[in-house]
Image (spheres, rainbow, N blue to C red):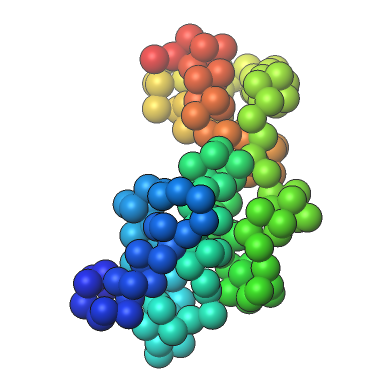
Length: 165
């Protein structure tokens, strides 16, 4: 999808970027509009601007990701909730009510990492020989946190604890 192909889609994008108090990252808005929203719109035989997804909702989703409240995966999940279950919903309210906030508490993430390391001494040895195994630990930690651990913090803690670069 090209944002400038239809004037209405360009306006839709522009409204999302400029919604509320300030401007948000245009690239993040464009990625959402031309990615997941366009896919949904196409499946319905619509253009992005013709969907029930409002520019204010797009702005809310982008702001939640930018503020590290939800991850990019959380944004996809949130958009699906807006599409299928809460078409009038406010993204921040949905995240709060449904407990979708990303875990940014380093202590909580560290606890999950410590438990996974303790339960998998064989994998700890393997990751030292093969650093690409770090992905396995990330997957386990994300599973243990219900997908809510902040990925950047998680990677940093894992690298530190496992002695991997």
